[in-house]
Length: 398
Image (tube, rainbow, N blue to C red; front, side, top):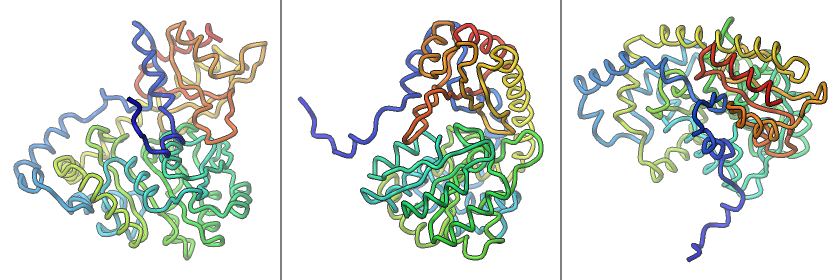
């Protein structure tokens, strides 16, 4: 029997990354394909203490149904967490808790996108964003990215040309590009929001994972310097990359009217994010363990990122080019074809699997006009020795 599926499903397809995972069962394979944090770095002791505190201090609140907007103690802790990073003036009532920042994107699609609406995204951008917004009928327009993030001159041209419903950006260590939007460009993005009366969505799941100096302030933090920009800005945050993705705790800061509509849609979607997970996260933040946790993961990821960059330069040489990441979980690279080597990421991915190493070709991360020479490599879950071995296998495949 052929089921009568909704027509909107014709605009999306199964994630290329999840399809790739089906090939990773081969024994001994070294995977640079994932987008996950390293589970070995989770603060299990701290989370266990937080769970016990949640059940000891307020078991009823942790185990009962809760407000759709979020568990109030967590909202207060998240507001304080954001203030510690320079996001002054954000109160508990300025945000809603979401089931991961992924749900925040889905709520934006539900509340803002009508079929045929234009939405500007970075090229490349987070794959799930492409699928999510297309599911609601968005026509996606790609703004080019370089080592300093989205190219704001080109972005302004696209705003004028397409008059988008909103613009979706990952300014700090974007997935997959790893790029960090410069301070000058961040200010320009906010100016464009005001000049052209367009909404900006800032997705910030990786901003805390910097390796050296802290990145420039978030768009949300900078909005106080650009009059009129705050009411044209949505900020999405997440604990998935810094604490645990299993908790599924994210949040969204935005204009009150938008948060109200998003809360309404969330109410008939999942009622509320798990109160148990929220109470656990609230207790964890309250205990003050986050700074030490972040310091630990930053050091490990920095070492692995450096190892991968050094190995790529040594083993692949002129056949590959990339910007060394300053944070996040990924190296975004481009094959040059130098020395007669392949310049097709998809072709190299197939050869690499045969050599026992996996990565994600870059083409699926483009909403349109894909660059088939690109690829994404994650260093997050692989130790230094395995990184060097895996890059060596990649060189053999090339």
